[in-house]
Image (cartoon, rainbow, N blue to C red):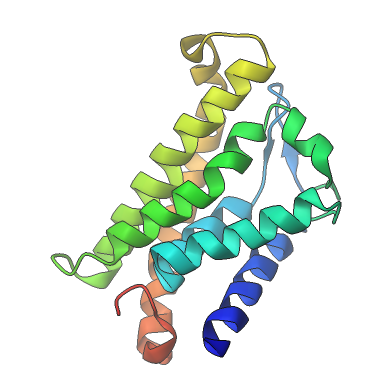
Length: 180
């Protein structure tokens, strides 16, 4: 129990720390940040339930006003902007990443890569595009091209998440909870 609480707090802090990487704002109003890497790592390392819990802790702190998003943004106002879909999709994405990573049919690095891709990109984009469409008063199909600039960076983050997960498995195998 104590280990779960500690790791949940640690990974919520990791997501926040990745928000310190300078943002690059796009015309859609949704910035490119490193925080989605944290979401992917929550799932690949902590697993589905613990990963989603860490993201929910992060979102709770964000809603309470802590400036945890890139650019020092926080508070309930961030849930009213074009990135709301991504924020709502964060815990779902972490859960799906963890679920896929836990599949023992694939070697760890491939399961983590598949999880990071399907959960951390596909699932997250569905929520993110939905949020952009809603906030920008566009249809889902009109908002979808606005997510394209994120794709290359997110593919790199998915690969990095898989490599970091494999590295954790080699150096601290007991810390890898997604495969337990």
